[in-house]
Image 1 (cartoon, rainbow, N blue to C red):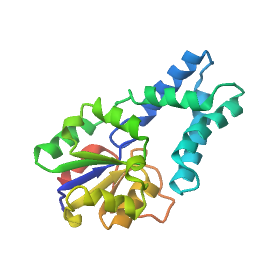
Image 2: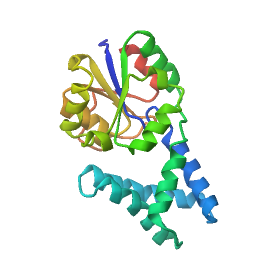
Image 3: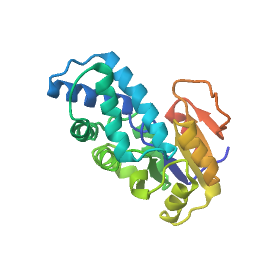
Image 4: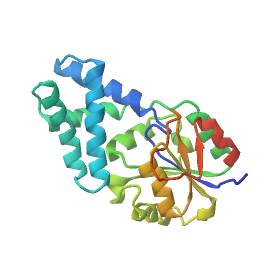
Length: 228
């Protein structure tokens, strides 16, 4: 079995439980604004958010536009009036508090770190939010560094994103580097573009309906032990 020295982890829904953080932040924001909140609102929001993030990753819109557009569309859909920009800013603050970990994240990061191997976070998320979540998380001491697309200037899966990452971690042997993430189009395609092995974290055991083929597929983070 091949082992690796450099582990590039996606953040949301790979190490961090983004769904739980999102739920908490949305509920808190709706309560603070005096709006009625229900699970259907989150479903509508996630559909809208997924579409605008796809547009952002394809370079069709900027991140500033993305952040406002998702809430302006949500408010229009559910029929409430609020300032989408202000709502987004306060939502991001609440989201930044959500450092909930995916099951097994603390243990696998601890084991990788204990063997003197490097862990880096590679994410397309919002800079301030991701920094806050990492800083307040239980795994912060295991992380050698993190790279947020908003700061890097390129998004996964752009090869330029990974060139930036590798140039800032002293260009380790790419044969010994592995990217782990839940997104085929961002993480796995990114790994392929960067010329490194990839591991699809498919916790839902979903079908791969794309032409993007990961080197490995796992459904639990503890399955990474065999690669350490």
